[in-house]
Image (cartoon, rainbow, N blue to C red; front, side, top):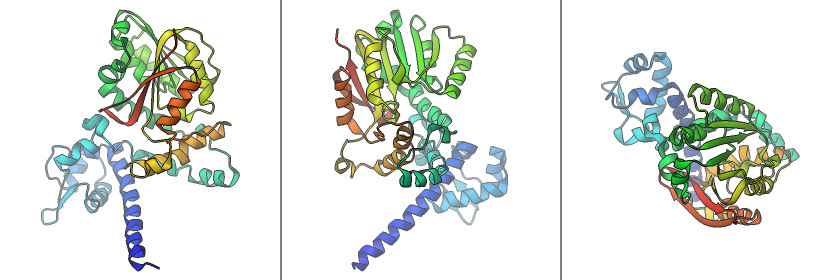
Length: 353
């Protein structure tokens, strides 16, 4: 046995346990607003921070200890003060928008809540249904909203040739797997002459979408509750978008075929999927691969399998995505990335005229 290798692996395991623990505490800091309260405040004591965030001091004090020992905040023992460095602020505060990784740490607890179900799935080969993830919809809505707010209008939609001009004049766009409809709301507000339709099978998400659209007075936005694999629309939309939706599907090929049918001849489809390679060997050096494969095992793949699906997984990758688009009949035009969404690749395809 190589004792040095064993010793190094011990350090790896300790680092892993500490990192997982800190991830949970970062999630709490995000959800309670502690990071936002610390941003720009300078050095503070636990008493001062608790008062500013309107939280219990004893819990804040223990949280600060975790943040200090984890290297997230600076600690001055003699003064008893803590400070969120300016270099850290954009990565853990809401002001960071798409850069705020504190939102992503929420998935550690979310996935941990179904660990027993996943262990059983390893034994049976069955999946874990979407209903076992009651908080996933809310997390995904927050995670996607920060990207949509930063880049939907100025970076994502302009990837589609002529889309801005067409939507300004008046066109139709459907967002399949729309969740709570944040993208539809932004588009309907920006392009009042166009018609936007959100499609999803989540009753909770669609209810929230309809309430928000009504409250905003958006008469050009509507929402349809249907499984995209059963969608039967022909030549209905000038543009279709999906954001992180295809790899979760039980029947991704059927969904893509239905999207193809739903587009008018010459219509464009913008498909955002997790940025990854299709082969494990090509993902070995990617910094977020452990997270992506964990998310896949404990959610994306398992949800698909639970509904009798293929279980493509989070890392089905660019090569497979392009193969599925071609099989659906699309002319794949390009694969792009954007600065505000480093987690996804954007696949632009067109329906033949």
